[in-house]
Image: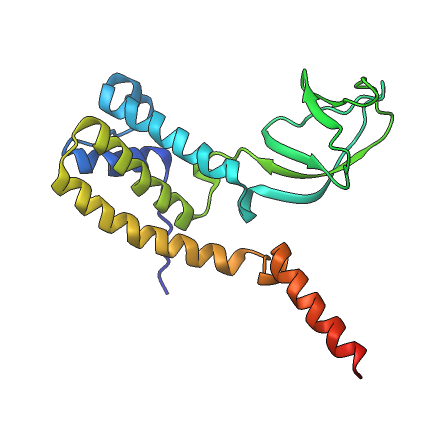
Amino acid sequence: MAINSDSITEVSAIGTMSSYLGIPAPLDIDDVPTDPDWFMASKILASTTKEMLNKGLEENSDVDYTLTQEIDGTVLVPDGALRWVVKYDYYEKYVERDGKVYDKLAKTDVLNTDLVVDIVWNFTFDSLPEIIKNYLVVKSAYRLVSRLKGSDSVLNTIQQDLDDANYEFLRYQGRTSHMTLLDNYDTNQIASRYIDYNHSYR
């Protein structure tokens, strides 16, 4: 069976975005800065990608990730971390300051302990799964055309593509996410009361 190994890259993404504008695609990523439309497309793609990654997907999130203290007792925030939260930090005392974890209550960055965190990473566009990249390309194209062209007919065409890409993206996230209805606090409370009620009458 023949497998298509072609994947969406940053330069091919900019090419797709350019096609909605009716302009030629760049041949190489080094060509992008030479054309203002390509350059704007690259900036919109980057901002749209980071906007999505900031929300925290299964693909760019780690739970129970250990930040190891340095020799001097400080804990560095890893390069590429978009956001993080220390597990069981009920007082919400840990924040980032000067690239280190800072304890607001103790007023120090010398923690003398490792920290376990849930963390969200800033991945490159090229490293993301194909379905996510496809959604980002079409969403970025919509933003690009609305800024440069503003054509209702083109935007309507992109909207149809965006709806399709969004459907596939949400379906993919539903299959890869570990979250269930019981992860919602209100739903969990209702389920817990139901279980307690049934157990009490057995």
